[in-house]
Length: 452
Image (cartoon, rainbow, N blue to C red; front, side, top):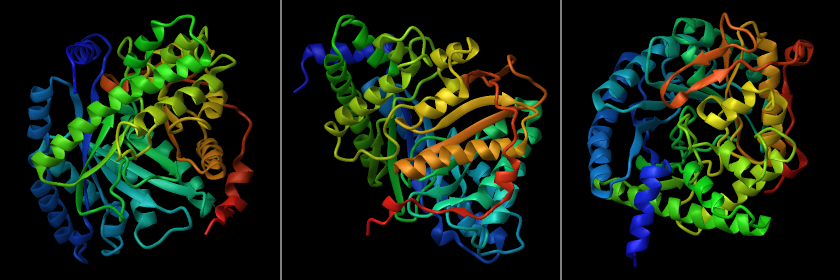
């Protein structure tokens, strides 16, 4: 039973502490849209998305009014498009991207994710064609997001795909250089990708999911930071308990919104992803939570330990608040989208190497990191390989979303605006890993993958 204090506390969280529902994402299966004629397949894709998601945005707005909580994004995720492209060899996969964009425009959603391929063990029909089309697809559309899964704990790491993705990331940035390289900000490379992720740019609708469902992604770094600030002398154990209780409250809000959206849209409720998703807004930063714990600045020694405790406490508190927790569920550390991370990177305290260490204990990986525009594709591939190795060995989802800032060098800034924020161009190692990347093949799965 809610009491007056609980209601007032929630209002304060929304008004003063940046509490929001980051996204409601409708997952839609497109398997029944497969056709050997690519034009017919694209029409089926458009028709099904519009049929299922035409009420998504109005429903989100209705829930916002009912509960008084902001829902920042309304999104759609679809079956990996490479599976549809496989049925029409010789067709241009970019036609699917344009069909998705048309559907996004009709439904009024912020993003559609699923221009994706799953190649952790090798390329099947349609995969390579779709991957090679990503730079053009992201250049000619505005709301399409793309992802490629290049490794898993069960399969190892497909190094041929890793090499290719280094080239694709660089080309995608070049194709959108006139728009602050925005294409690369909509492309993520995964190891151990999950099928029910509501967050972009990595969302896709897995083949094991139902025909249509609704997912919710919560937020609330500002709420957690505010809660910790009230206990400046608390012990580590007490801090963990405060975070768990706060995460419980945040997740209950997500559960409420998800259940309501499911009922109004008449589709199954999928999951609540309880990841702490920051924004560039003041007071909505994961880095500032870590600093509230006792760090002078995020990125200094002790950062990884603080982040590990935060991630664990968020999951423990969230799991108690919902029986449908899924997705990624942890703490995101996207540099350009987090005011504290931006400051730490600009000050030189937060390095690419420290971020890589942090990804071993959080969700998800090297996210929204701006690198010099003259970076070699092989260096991008090497960064992807390092991050995938962390995910593979630790049986967790890791990802890389790098933005080569074409025409910019270390110390300059790339401006995206909105939720994507801005990012200082971070230095990368100059020594080459090209010989390693060009060997090709597959890094074998670790011993602990043999769990059947």
